[in-house]
Image 1 (spheres, one colour):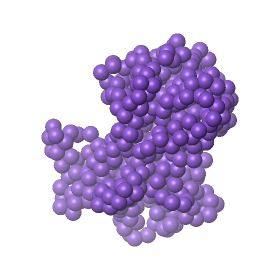
Image 2 (cartoon, one colour):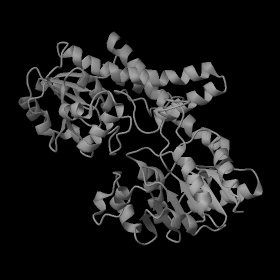
Image 3 (tube, one colour):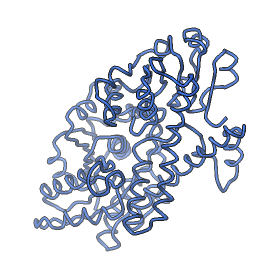
Image 4 (cartoon, one colour):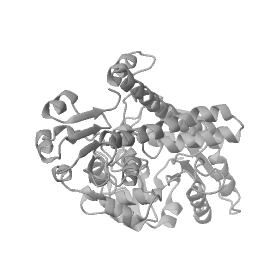
Amino acid sequence: MKITNICCIGAGYVGGPTMAVIAEKCPHIKVTVVDLNEARIAAWNDDDINNIPIYEPGLNEIVGKARGKNLFFSTNVDKAIDEAELIFISVNTPTKTYGTGKGMAADLKHIELCARQIAKVAKNDKIIVEKSTLPVRTAEALKSILDNTGNGVKFQILSNPEFLAEGTAVQDLLSPDRVLIGGETTPEGQNAIEALVDVYANWVPRERILKTNVWSSELSKLTANAFLAQRVSSINAISELCEKTEANVNEVAKAIGMDSRIGSKFLKASVGFGGSCFQKDILNLVYISKAFGLNEVADYWEQVIIMNDHQKRRFSKNIVQTLYNTVSGKKITFLGWAFKKDTNDTRESAAIYVADDLINEQARIALFDPKVEQKQVLSDLNYLDTRQPEENANSITTFQNPYEACADAHAIAILTEWDEFKTYDWQKIYDSMLKPAFVFDGRNLLDAEKMRAIGFVYQSIGS
């Protein structure tokens, strides 16, 4: 099958950038991204290309080139499903907050709703592509729903997990390490795989496109994120030991990272990992392992999450202890709220949990993040449901200017590794703060010697 029309259900952090790159690289294919969220679609269609809802370096230029030519954003889901030969499902699959599997299993209600809508609308054969991060055997459930509609339409289900790192998503899409496509081993399944391979082959070398069965593809995504998160928790565990022994975690990380068997990536100690994937995928792996009675396997992977939670609590506890065991009424400035630099995504950001701890201690938090607004910050805190929304609103204030955020602060906590933080006039910031002026660098971003020379009481992770 030669693909000429693609639909993507879900205009979020995966669907939007992925479809924009496909549209740019495949001008002969019409790509329509649909979402029921009218405000989000309106933002994707904004005349000012800098106002698109997702910040990724280079994304606005790519959207600007293709939008209105062969890239379209719409709320007309049924029309897009009807016209497409290939449909990506790229909707949110959060961790369940209710019922069986609460706190671990993925909530698949949005996936099922997509399947039922496709089944209702489709009049001819379709290829359905799982793009969301899903638990193993979800394709089986999708196929069951789609194949039992009674309208005679045949569906092929493929798993095509994303391996994007936010902040570098555009580059990851333009030059991926690999593209993974899983499908059935039947002739029809193999034909569907080849149809998707042909789309990616417009810019990805075919040797980088891996073809597997659907179960291997689904499990590979969870396993990749689990391995990466494990490395972060491992180096963070060592960071605490470094602080007790006067070793330096950066020196340790460099030494072990030069071992070719280990490598240097994901060995940066910090206040903890965040984002939409790591915690969710590990919890999913834990849930699946327990479902199969593999309790030791489940305990092993759960410890990665436990270590990450400990690192966040340790950071906030250290702020309180260092500030003479009380932060009540004190102004603590947060630099950064996004879970990492070069994205406006705040999901599972360490900043949320550190803020929650400090608000419990009655601190007054001032915040500056170059890409995150007050509305999102309050939404993140309110989602925790640890206090009334008005108490959150009264406890944290966002600023448009970092120097204003830092003025009269008792302490600064660096929670996101934005490059611009390194370029600030730290002497000016020091002069504006209450003394002694504390900096808690949760990303090991700044030069410790320079900060201490200015006069800061400077603390970093693992040294």
